[in-house]
Image 1 (cartoon, rainbow, N blue to C red):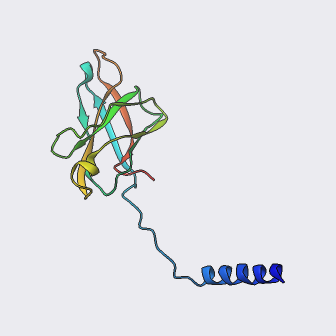
Image 2 (image 1 turned 90 degrees about the horizontal axis):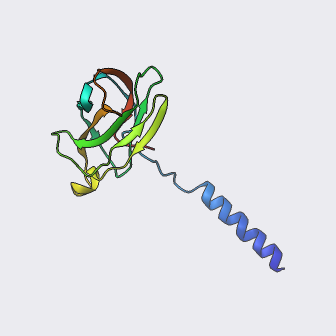
Image 3 (image 1 turned 60 degrees about the horizontal axis):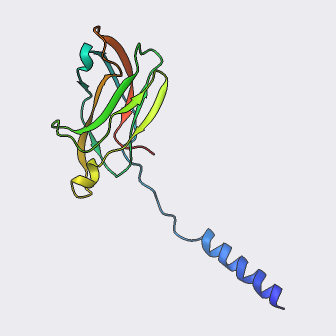
Length: 138
């Protein structure tokens, strides 16, 4: 008798889950945006256009295989102010998540950020690099 009651209970639970209202998950701002730069000698910074950051996730960068150098990248606010993001290295054909506190620092609300990107070494020549980035990762 107990087994039959347990089977009925599990069946009712399964049916209730099947007919429960569906919850939707809104996607964050993780679509890729292209970037490409001739990165200046002496590790001079280049900057992506700013984008809106919608959550507390990592930012994301992909350094394309067409790049002639590895890059260091970090998150800044759109106005150039630092937000506590360490330089993160990405070799050609490498994707990396970039830790940052941009969303948290502004009180857990949307803010605009950009990436600062430089050569991964201090050479005397400009080197080409390209890839994609997003302010929020999945």
